[in-house]
Image 1: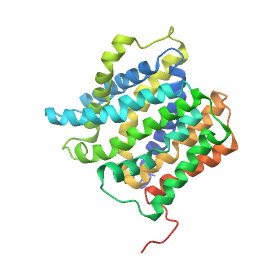
Image 2 (image 1 turned 90 degrees about the vertical axis):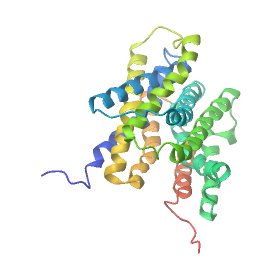
Image 3 (image 1 turned 90 degrees about the horizontal axis):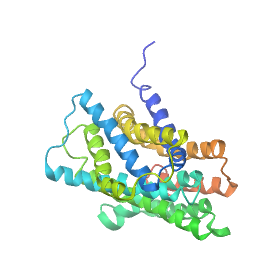
Image 4 (image 1 turned 135 degrees about the vertical axis):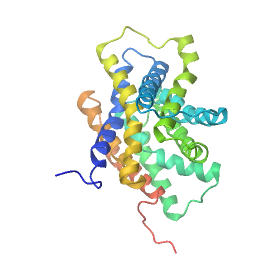
Length: 299
């Protein structure tokens, strides 16, 4: 019996949730041999090359105007280059489990940035409650109440800095990049490859490895680049086309669960019940600030 349009999106949705959730594990593996800068550069170079080859095979045109590339470069900086580095350096201080859970603060950061910086909307009461729940969730996930070492605090700040970059990048992209008349895979290829170009001078100057390549680091960066930073974009765009943006965006509720399971299972990372509660709070915060759920009726 042939698949119906209503179920065609499911395999891509599952693949995307697993791939993005596993990215935090692959970052840890890559850090065996690569520096944080090396991880950010290599994932952009591998992912960008993968997407460019896909565009070549499918004969997809790339942006041509300088102003278009300028806007794409800003998004590449905020959505790939800087957070790619911050997530990698953050995972040298904290677990992949914590990184995966804190990544779920992206909707919270996006709403705060839109409200404060872009002034495209005002936070209503439900969203305000969501913001408070989100900050409470961050406290529980990080274990701030029980005390953190200076190194852990630094890692948490770097991870939240990465999601803040996402929060700035999404509204900027919607305003200046998503409106461009090119296929989504074209914009994705340009964006990811551009991030590698932006990081290339720093990678050349400082190098990308700190020790000889290990089998685990090779597999980690190849999967992180080709799948997590390459084909994942194609799957995401396909999910949006087949299932709609609302269903497609719920993959962000899957990734922290996958990151937690893999971190505990394969990396033997410690985990506390307070982090479970904190993770639930962070996910609930995202649902509230995105107006997926409402606690109070507002007339």
